[in-house]
Length: 335
Image (cartoon, rainbow, N blue to C red):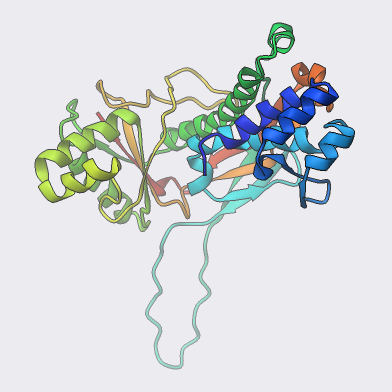
């Protein structure tokens, strides 16, 4: 797929909406069929050439659907925690989730004896959805000067901001509740060794770590360590530009800038990085038990009318919460 395809298409459609009939025909004749398709209200892909030439864009779903697609396109490169944590659909603004114990063991039972009922104490975790929202920076001057590429880029960047908000809240919740910490002792030279220690700590608590999430600086430190330790691994890493699996766990990078300041929802987070003492460099998670995203309303476009003069009224919103469930499933390494 071409990078930022929807952003480019949105810019084209915004430009088309301002054109006169003759100018529109020349523009449409230069566009390839793929660029002239859109989704109707039933979700079907429709060829738009004849429609645009006869009626123009007004009255179609072409611009609204491209705005939505551009928002998603902006969020896609930074998707992280929604890819690894389970998502619970919330029916209201608050939801309580029962949480049991971590791994236990079956008892010995004599032949013919009654099998005892396993008694497990449950606690509960409450998700309270909070609204997060943003608006693309679109000015009258951008519209008057026909800066349609810039407008489309601002829509894409707004989608990125929304996804970053979700990542930031999830990151804070995981770090605030990391029950298994491996401390590098104020030296970041061997993060791979301490990832093994964090994995061991999580395993010892009857959890199965299955995901590593890196800060950018810890990611780079692991690359440097890998170049020194393992030539074969280093060759593969240099070719792909990724760490791949480490200790049997897939890896992701979350490039969120976070600090000790409090986040919305009462969550706070230590500094996410790997350059100073007590910075948190990476998370080692058992994503089946460590936490979840409570989603009351996923990302959506609001306050939008199908007219370029209403572009300034676009806003994006999302209502969600992220909570830790079994903290033994959360490990981390600190500098």
